Image (tube, rainbow, N blue to C red; front, side, top):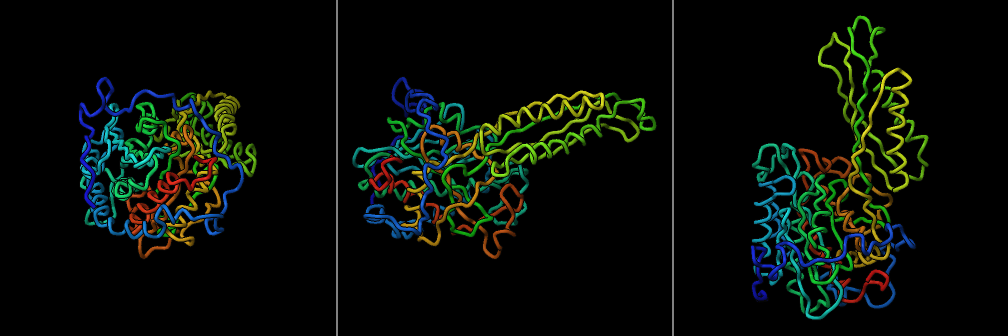
Amino acid sequence: MTPPPRAARGTPGAAPAGQPRGTAGAGPSPDARRTPDGSPSGQARRASDGAPGESAAAVAGGPALLGEARRLAPEAVALRRALHRGPELGLELPATQRLVLDALDGLGLDVRTGRALSSVTATLAGAADGPTILLRADMDALPVTEDTGLPFASRTPGLMHACGHDAHMAMLVGAARLLAGRRDALAGRVVFMFQPGEEGHHGARLMIEEGVLEASGARADAAFALHVHPNLPAGAVRLRPGPQMAASDRFRIVVRGRGGHASAPHTACDPVPVACEIVLALQTAVTRGVAADDSAVLSVTRMAAGTATGVIPDTAELSGTLRTLAEPTRRRLHETIARVARGVAAAHGATAEATVETGYPVTANDAAFTDVVLRAAADALGTEAVDVLPAPHMTAEDFSYVLRAVPGALAFLGACPPGRAPHEAPALHSPRATIDEDVIATGIACEAAVALAFLTGHAPERAR
């Protein structure tokens, strides 16, 4: 099919006069249309349960989408490998942004770039008016030294795409290509959100502030993202209504005692055993203070004290993470960390100061939209590939900011590399993390299927 006329890419001047590059005009704040926290309003049915009435496959393409995605896969895999070779960190990703822009060129999309970050936002307008769905891929890498031995391994010392963001970008570009070829079947708009700064930099929040939710000229009605997961079977799609991933916060505790000679601890106030006691007390506070059906994970991951073996130090420092699924529990444990640290320290004549850095909120899937994803993915990939995730994962994601603003969902895409059992595969963020590249076609088909199902009227009314 001949591609549509080439649209302006996100260069200066591409936005309408008087409009900052990288936005689509001012809109309401992200919280102006906040939806409920995503807790299920009724359990979503398994994809294999079937659905009454006409299947979304009749309009959205069903199994044919996977065939189209597989034809696009060689180009998508090549893009993934190019991105993998040149990882970049944080919010400024100029080389990554250029690769994405080049890959989107010629698709007839309205493409814009960010102001405060190297984002790319591309909008596909369908043949008829209708709702807007946003599809998102993250772009940034990690400060990890790669140890995969892959021929396309990172060429940048100390940096690696160890969380699958290279695959996410390749899948979303592929979905854009597939959907651009079907624009005549679309009643509405698709916004492709390529987001830097997922790894701790709140990039999704920054893109919301720059107007990504209004990029099409109308506020997004729904949002969807995939995240590859090497510890799930390759090609498996897993999601659940309500919490999919946890909120994640960081804490730091400084214990102040009184230093002295190691031979005479009775003349000092040793902060080291105080710090150790705080670690144990925090574990007890979680296991005895949080209900068994309300998950919370507190991990002290760093301890530091002293510079010499013969000297009791003045201070000891602890730091770690807190992960929760319920906002009241999150707030209560913030207070608990400070209270326990102060109390234990005071019992030993020391003092303690605790600070908590609030991180990403809970990634909560809208129950109705989760049902849309389960059915659309089952139509495109087969019912055997799709199921409800039995329990949330305690990792965190800044797509949570998008899901606080509009209904939507994040799903895991199993990507266990060939020759490995899922439980044996190196986890994400590992220097040996890798994926089965065959799932890139699966991801392209899944993203396209969800968009088509939503825009062709097969989404339940409560999700549209």
